[in-house]
Image (cartoon, rainbow, N blue to C red):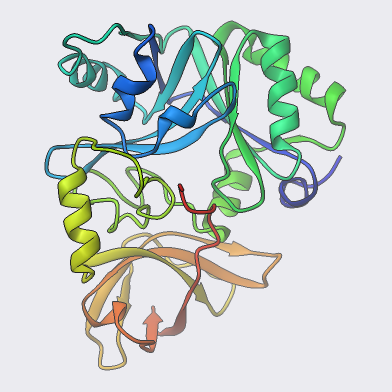
Length: 310
């Protein structure tokens, strides 16, 4: 069996996300209705094709990130932990004349994300074997998929995955935490949240369609895109040394001015140094400033997330 880091790069790393909520939308108008609410173009979501998206407030703030996958007769939405009831009510208020219906099925379904070049193929086989639904969603730039299955079938998946792909690995919490930080994948509630818009969360190019029609919060998002200048943004940092900084530790300019804070960090044995995600503002987002964390040098690096939404 491959180590987790190698599985994500050569095969599949499977990550259970049992705390995420599940909403399901059924009916002939399900795709067109949902497309007028969320940021991604879900009109393109069909069985085997998924979307990473956001649901925003009217003021353009992130209420939840979403994985959207499809069966032949429904769209399944994965929402952030603890938010399914609130978001179901939020969505339900927007159902007026559409031939669609929304249901909170969190108790009955559970999500996994798959990361690595063979993710889509394995997700398809697991969905067929378990009665679930899946779609290709690449959060890391290594290939990926999202899979929703009946909660009662979760325990069957390790054996099913091993039978289909002997090199696949189920991640423990530490393995996924390291991979997501290495690959610049922020986590809702840790690296961004309800006080951020998509640009500030660093998701404007991976979760927002810039070519589809209107959606809730679009005007604010478009104005931010045209304005360009941000108060803050989630970025990735490379740090010297093996001791990762603690969340909340300040990021400073050479003169000691604090320009942000670390939100997540880990030591990467593969890279040989620590890596972090941080919320930076002020002069730290202009040019190529010299930065430090806990007295040690830090440099901005590109976040190797997925390709643009469209």
